[in-house]
Image (cartoon, rainbow, N blue to C red; front, side):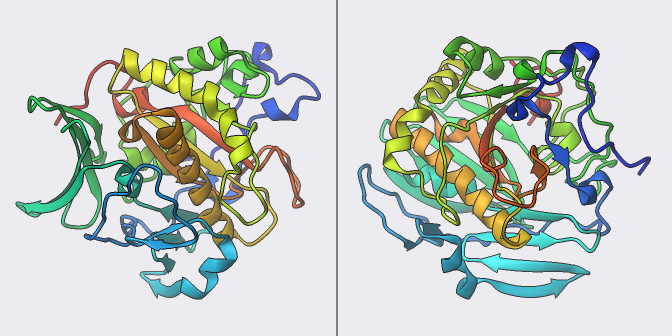
Amino acid sequence: MGAPAPSVVPGSAAATPPPGRAQYAPPTVAPAFRAAPAVAAPLPPPPRHDNIKPLAIGAAVGAGVVAGAIIGGSIADLHSQRQEVVEGGRTIYTEPDRVIIRDPGGQAYVRGDDVYRFRYGARDIRTETIGGETRTVVVRPDGSEIITVVGSDGQMLRRIRRDTGGREVVIIDNSYRDPRAVGGFYVDVPPPVVNIPYDRYIVDAQDASPDVIYETMEAPPVQRIERRYSLDEIRYSPNVRMQMPSIDVNTINFDSGSWTIPPDQAARLQVIADGLNRAIQRNPREVFLIEGHTDATGNDTDNLSLSDRRAQSAAELLTQQFGVPAENLTSQGYGSQYLKEQTDGPSRINRRVTVRRITPLLNGGTASAAPPR
């Protein structure tokens, strides 16, 4: 698969991170992720649930399991619900609404299901099978529909928005598979060379103005995109994902081991939500990845699950409180795989949620065009 990737994203002299400003430092890719995974089979899908029900606006949901999704609580609550098996050389940890896959090469991945986020305020949710594909249709109060298409192997293929007139827009096409991608999810490409200032490549939400945040949400890739990538390739290939600038939402902090966003911190997402809504109004096909990261305390399996739940919590809050369309967001946790401060101890900078526009990656650099169907 070629030479191992460097540990950090290189930059030109003009892009040197500001001295003494660790929040602008590029994340260091964990050693295991600088090479292809050892197992070339596709990643298993998350646990499947066909009984997803609408969640009423204003519904108070405490810690527990709702339609297979764990709501609230802390990582300690999951230990008794986690099952472990070894399949094809991989170790697979299954939780009620997540699966964590550990490759013998040292890489680890978490997979969840975005459909759970679409329940909030839905009028109806139905599941239908057509020609081997399963479609989950979420009907919004205005009659529009969000359709998630899953293949017979459990892998998400497409996400579609259908308006009340029957017109469809493909927001995500995950059916494309490049033969060079290991297992259909890992792409070995060199890291991008950043030629813009790092404070515009990695934007600190706490310091940035609303205009800078919005400009980052519409910023082009730092280099030419060679081809379109599937959502899985973007999620699990760091050098693909890092071709796009990002915003570190370090204005919110989570309690240790928890994925709940305290109410007093929720309002701090307002400027992020405003930027997202503005960008989506301009181009309804925009897709943003909400990433969750932890520091290096705790074990890798807990950190992956925790970071994925934190990313989902941020995405849910952006939709429920600020009206960001859920279908234009996707979330993914990375645990402690991409540290900015190289420490095994607690680190506020490493415990972060990141927002990254991925539309150009999905569309091969043509942000305004829908992927082929």
